[in-house]
Amino acid sequence: MRGQVHFSFEQAEFRHNGKTYFVSDKNGAVAEKINALRGEKQAYEATAEMCLVARVLSKTQNGGRGFGHAERYAQAVEVEKLC
Image (cartoon, rainbow, N blue to C red; front, top):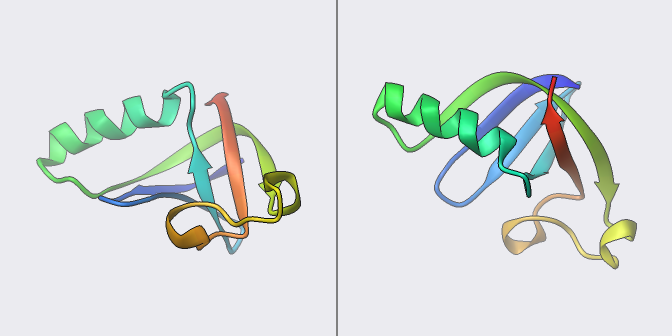
């Protein structure tokens, strides 16, 4: 899946085909790339175009709960690796 990853102080989200997903990055592949970008730009918020190998998770798969801060997201992408 190719789209934009946006990291801010409280959240990480992935935008793909008009939908916005919470990013679950347990192996740190996305965070590593975003941290490098933050260093280059000297800014905490960062947005980058990325290709992710990821699984889409729904509220049902999360015990009926949303994802992220205040359960704002109905779906999440569980990142396995970058393309």
